[in-house]
Image (cartoon, rainbow, N blue to C red; front, side):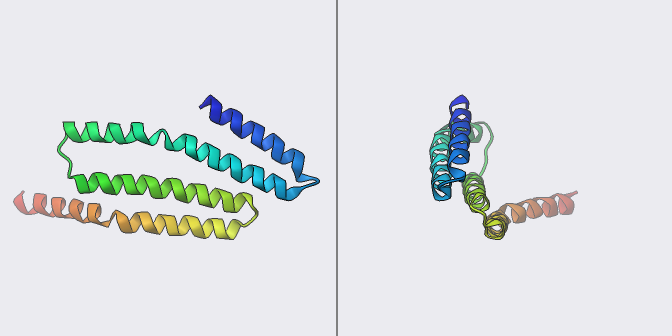
Length: 128
């Protein structure tokens, strides 16, 4: 995390330095820093996936639900990354639309989990 913080701080300082004279360089520095930090963050996904697999070994969870969870994590990460780039580039409305579509995508992907939960509640109520 220290590396990410250092990269972020150096990138912001460089972007500020170029903001006055060469504004396009400021944007390029910002985008490059975002991609570097993104690739550093992707390395952490292996740990998360290993932990999810270990949890699945302890608790019998349908693998379809695990796949949905991983997709939701991916959508969230990509959405936040894209929306932040749009907003930093001065396109606030596009960034907000990216966030909206990301939220709708998560909602659509999570529907099987919601239906399974409702089936479980329905079975519990009819048995009880």
